[in-house]
Image (cartoon, rainbow, N blue to C red):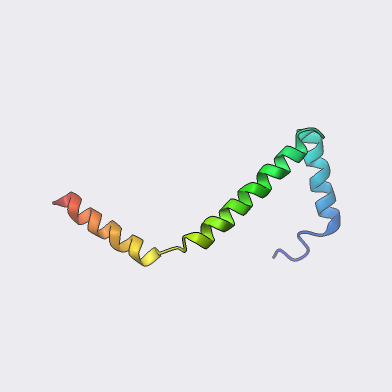
Length: 68
């Protein structure tokens, strides 16, 4: 389905559109912000692994507490 999605030609077109929309002065700031956001997301996922089972247990406990 996504075969060949990020070919060099596609990336150049996406970059050209971003350059037209945001301008050459704003584009480096957007790239920096995007990189920092991705880095923070990766660090957050590494520090706090998802605990889905305990979250579901907490929700059921909270609903029992609310119902009284």
